[in-house]
Amino acid sequence: MNRTMYDLIGLAAGVCFILALKGLSHPKTARRGNLIGALGATVATLVLFAYNAPLNNLGWILGALAVGLIIGVPAARKVQMTQMPQLVALFNGVGGGAAALVAIVEYLNLGAEATTAEVIFTVFTVVVGCVSFSGSIITFMKLQELMTTRPVVFPGGRFVIAATLAAVLGASGWVVVELGTTPLLVLAALSLLFGILFVLPVGGADVPIVISLLNAFTGLTVAASGYVLDSTLLIIAGTLVGASGTILTRLMADAMGRSLFGTLFGAFTAKPQNVSAAGEERPVRSGSPDDVAILLNYARRVVIVPGFGLAVAQAQHTVRELADLMISKGIDVAYGIHPVAGRMPGHMNVLLAEANVPYDQLAEMDEVNPTFGQTDVAIVIGANDVVNPAAQTSPGCPIYGMPILEVSNAANVIFLKRSMRPGFAGIENELLYDPKTMLLFGDAKASLTKVVSALKAL
Image 1 (cartoon, rainbow, N blue to C red):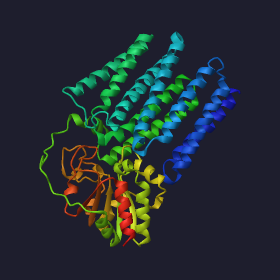
Image 2: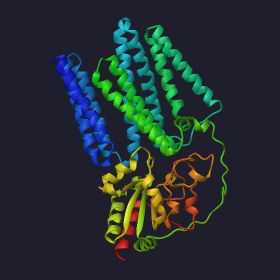
Image 3: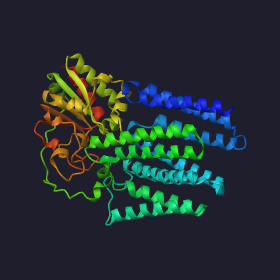
Image 4: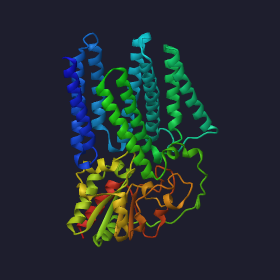
């Protein structure tokens, strides 16, 4: 295959990536967009083999592909929706780490023949790729609760992070000035350390934003490695991921009601919270599935607010059954979707799409908030932080300033929870103690199944 044909096919694959992003911008076309992106990636891989014909290392390459397939396919097919954010974090980290390793290998192959531009792009790829890799591992551990989900801060933490960043920049200059393996490995080690320190101060509620940011980092490393490898395809794909990830990060930060800098480093300046009623036993109003069914039977409008608890219980099909039953009784039903509900961007959209919930029933936060005043019942299923009034009333708390779904304006609130344990941000929800809130304790799927049975009997 000649270079012209290679470039034309690569351009077609790049167009597939662009169409994939367009498709992923809306739930209705997301599946098609994903398939188009997969087609583009397959074409890009095959054309690379046809053009370069790497016969000398073909066995190693096919072996690596086989290992990737053996690990990746079962992991993607068997992963539960509750663990999807962890999988995304790991895949993203592996992508950044792979780009960094490729850049290091290519740098060593070029040796003294490397141009200044190639060295600079290599340095950029190694730094950002290593930061993405180690940072993604920390987000995985936070999501998996292998470590605390609270911000990890220590005395002088800001200065340690700043000093590490300065060391990374110094090592970068060292690599550019003095070519060699040692400076590059030192740079990689410092970058890995900075990635860890970069993510540790982030609290659990802000992890989705960090996942999006690290995804943008990975895209930038791929684009930079594309320059080093003289691959237009990598430049296109990496630039698309980097640009879309940056836009998504900005949108997510806006949805949290804070700046990106405040999200990443706000833990160092946060003021201690005054926790009223600490240690006190406060009364709550709990109910039974029959109580909930009676309340729903006489409602005219119901808004369902899904959260991570819905994913934990795998109750998306049951909530769809409940919604269909209410609609058959003439009740207006909508799903209130918060942009950062769950543990990754779009988590609730993916979850409800799995249950084939009609897209026109999904309402974004800005669309549904004005309607809560005319809502008879708001059903909160496993969501906590995204409906917590503390975001509006408690300065200094981790989620203060974050726009929330204002379910407290509904006439009645049904809160499905396993226990009184706080949400991912680790703060108490005053809505649980509101007199118009009824708590239905237990597994969400089991509880909703009982509600459906009771509602059918009315």
